[in-house]
Image (cartoon, rainbow, N blue to C red; front, side, top):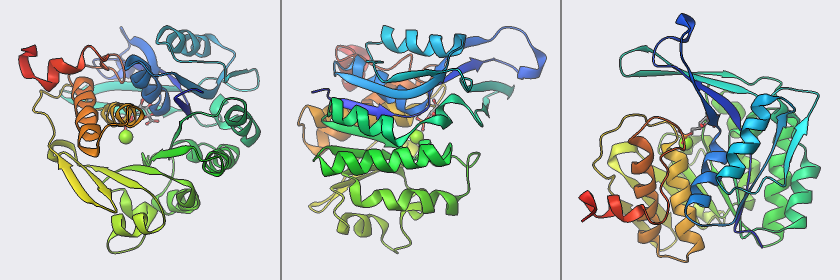
Length: 308
Ligand code: CKP
Ligand code: MG
């Protein structure tokens, strides 16, 4: 039984230290929330598979090769000839400003189907299924695929985790609400930043309302203010670690991978938040969405500052 299956879109990423229109050197890598989480979990020693579709092109092969190198199981990676691998560009039009542009409409990942997600879950049921609110924004079939995956997993008693990850460039908040609210009855854990909860519910006390639907825990983050886990037994808070932030993109995924890792290790809610916060702190210290994610041996370096 694999520990985790994640489903989503992985893209090739181009990173420039100035405005992209000026040309010059770019750093080529991969990006994508769900594959970032998969890499984070694999680095922490878990057995994790990523499901997604990529173009039968060089970027698609870069994604496969990178995930394999990071010990992520790519059995469920599908190459398609009908569409291309998406790309994401990160450039710096001004000092300290990272601009993100997507080139993903009609991409390979938008051909994701319910049948392939359900098939993967049935062939090798994981302990946790992790999805994000990005995938249903890609296309109608990707939306159906996400819903079918969470329905199948929850019916099989699998822990289902959703990171809301609202992306204003992909859809409006009402569109996201329409697509994400039907997922709620099937979820075990929700990750959201504090300004994303109103996408999931109109209730004045969103966390209480979400817990009353049977969701076991709602984990909220607010950057440097730290993170909270809300359960029926109450709310606990964990402060953010004090580190120099170089690049915060990917921090949410790092946080999720640390949290799910500690969940797989059956740790307490406090310890889950602690590992999540530590993973997030590793991610923000350098450029790149996933490159600086910690291994298990790395965790104490930030848990006990200066590594002492
Ligand atoms: O919420 P995060 O900053 O952790 O997410 C970053 C990822 O998938 C990044 O890799 C990017 O490609 C994306 O989120 C996205 O689609 O925006
Ligand atoms: Mg996020």
